[in-house]
Length: 184
Picture (cartoon, rainbow, N blue to C red):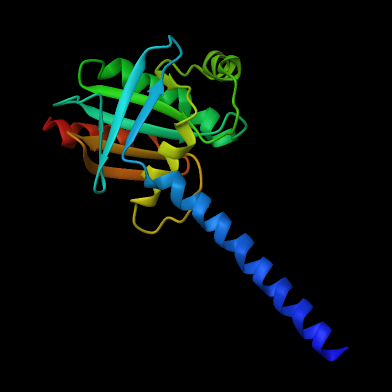
């Protein structure tokens, strides 16, 4: 009887660790890729390439790229949308704001509703690679884990990290960093 209990216990522990291992492999596969193919709401494809801790968007040079990692159900994410739109309009020739939802199986119609309801007048990416891209970006940021908070805005220039913001951030702070990155 004792032998049977030990064998069952060993089997249970093995299965437990296997399940944990599978979850870890899923997280690792989410951030392992170095090339992400994403589409915007007009169905135009964009390429985001990860090189080390740097991310380039469509090989854009000289512009600031601000990835807005959000969820449609998140109140601070909704609140920041109009501010990001304001910045996109103000710096239209020098800034690309790209919204990336962390939600699984998010229909484009839900993204359109979020965009319309919250004044998100900037590029919204809708693709199966969105979550992978969001987790990959977050994995390169010091102090963040796989359970990172949203909204998370990450600013790059020529692929190099400039700054990132966790949570609701005043528009003026973001604009100040955009100006610095552009040398204005």
